Length: 238
Ligand code: ADP
Ligand code: MG
Image (cartoon, rainbow, N blue to C red; front, side, top):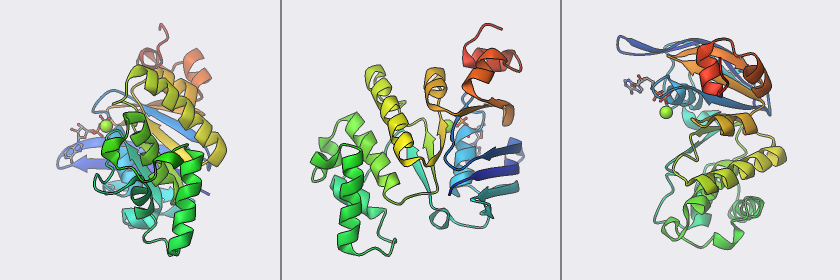
């Protein structure tokens, strides 16, 4: 179960308030795309949900429980970034198993879990390779595999495909969709790419200068954008 509730969430860096009173509830299993221009606060919002950044006001709840005071490890939230951040000296299997080191599972169970997830992501042939011996798409799959092994309550994606070429992006987009249909983990997905947001998301949240301009299904935003800002982001003439 991985609902995510943001209740009056705020963030300031010194005198600058970059997130203003964000209220949104994401249901267990929902796939939400978070879109908006560079600097509008998307990464800051994800970092607050994961616990990498403190909140300046309001409350974040995961599966109904307040998490403001919990550190990232205590939240069981997985982040997938554009730069993968795999450990270069470890094999794929070791990279994935590293996230299970505090799980309490025995060695054999950890290995089985890694193999199961590797099969799911079609990287089971790559388990003994190191990140330097992988293509960009393969590295992205490993990063997702590393996130999935922990059975997180939610996945947070911060523009995970933005470093890939256009063809691979389309392929990975389809794989992320298929994966979500299989495992059904609550997902918050930051992207610059409207088509990515439209095809992946159950719901799109449009952020501008730290405020939500509109939240709705792709169809709602496409047919009834609340304002010209949303219309320009979703790609319809206003
Ligand atoms: P986005 O991911 O939408 O591009 P960010 O969340 O990275 O936006 O940034 C939102 C705003 O917060 C920007 O104005 C950015 O400069 C500012 N910001 C982000 N992190 C910090 C920080 N650690 N210290 C000061 N300002 C920051
Ligand atoms: Mg960002």
